Image (cartoon, rainbow, N blue to C red; front, side, top):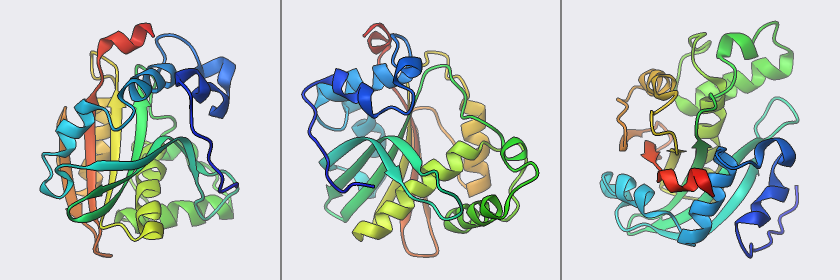
Length: 225
């Protein structure tokens, strides 16, 4: 994977980084809503800042850079975890790695039972690694969503790579009905923290990192972008 990143000149530049641009780049879909929201902000959007600030360690966060569709390699397989946005930020406590998952009405993908059916050696290695990073017992509950495992692990992996004190996984949803919040809440319960709409929960990991998990509403207007 290249280590060279190109700056964007507007939200339409985000389209070319998508795995399936023609399928996902549509008005009302999360990819386009997220791109227009983040580009207008030019930084971490205000609604995310407001929620993260509820965690004392993340107050007054400054974004050093934000990368659309940032890929993070995970052991056990050739496919990376592709974050909708990844942010390296800074607070008075140090650096913070933030993995952002954009949503509207789409699900968090397959459950563990679906993804781990007749698993290969690589899948076993990957799921064991993810559970270790998240401090969740292996094997995890079948009904949990696999995407939340690797997206959260992405934040932790990059936090370790950059020597950050904090890692955060944020679901930035533009759904006005909080679609799929129950799946997010079930995942947080497995991690050992409560879930809250427009809220953030924090867990201190055994490695010393503070892990923050947040669910944040984006404005409805971005569904018309």
